Amino acid sequence: MITRFSKTFLIAVFALFLLGSLALLHPPSRTYVDTWTGDFFGEGGFIPPSPQQGVRGKVIMPKLGNATAKAELGRATWKLMHTMTLRFPEEPTQDERDALTNYFHLTSRLYPCGECAAEFQLLLKKYPPQTSSRRAAATWLCYLHNQVNHRLGKPEFDCANLDATYDCGCGDEPLGSSTGGSANDPMDLERDPSKDKKAQGLVKGGRAAVS
Ligand SMILES: Cc1cc2nc3c(=O)[nH]c(=O)nc-3n(C[C@H](O)[C@H](O)[C@H](O)COP(=O)(O)OP(=O)(O)OC[C@H]3O[C@@H](n4cnc5c(N)ncnc54)[C@H](O)[C@@H]3O)c2cc1C
Ligand SMILES: *[C@@H]1O[C@H](CO)[C@@H](O)[C@H](O)[C@H]1NC(C)=O
Figure 1 (cartoon, rainbow, N blue to C red):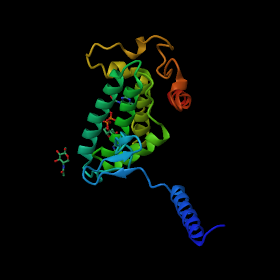
Figure 2 (cartoon, protein in one colour):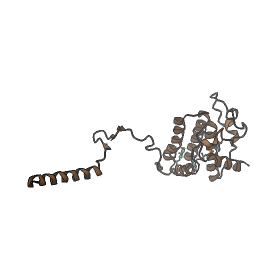
Figure 3 (spheres, rainbow, N blue to C red):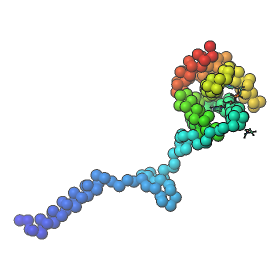
Figure 4 (tube, protein in one colour):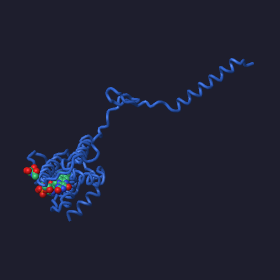
């Protein structure tokens, strides 16, 4: 015989059980921000900020009106970037590849000529940085520079002359001497083009532009 008291007790226990299950259906978020340091915490503890933060995004600088300054800045920047790709490791690590990719995306945000940066962003979208080798990176940038040359009505540069034009006297192996691939064909990007997104398309585009 169930007493009135035990009946009430059972109902209370059942109600508590129901409430408990409801709470379990929506566990509280276990990611929170430390209001003091601004750090993110998750189930595994501290979550470091994404290294990509700030790398991709819109153009930061305004238009550069002075044509003389714009041309000087352009020549200096092309020199820097071509020399960079021509000294880039022949067999880069993933970290080195990421560094170069991020460099170009950061440049397309921070380039001090805003209208140039906007064009550069469009180009990067169409032709993502090729970073699997020195040859891939140097040839890709030469191709990109030629796209800018074309838009500005400048003559096309023969990418076979990269070594001669950008000999920094650093004592590096010239592009043409690297093993594998056909040494005299600057459009032969690398040993394994499948490592680069769109590398095949770029090779074809490059050939078409040269012939
Ligand atoms: C990312 C970027 C975007 C730009 N956008 C604009 C823009 O929107 N509007 C604008 O007016 N200017 C722009 N510029 C500047 C422009 O590209 C030129 O730098 C500037 O007009 C000066 O031209 P230049 O004739 O002296 O030769 P540059 O194009 O500056 O080239 C310098 C030297 O590099 C060599 N070279 C030429 N082509 C290649 C190639 N394909 N590969 C390797 N080496 C080469 C040649 O020896 C040349 O003399 C931009 C520059 C950069 C870096
Ligand atoms: C344009 O830029 C050049 C080079 O930086 C500078 O010498 C010149 O004074 C500038 N012209 C004007 C009008 O500011």
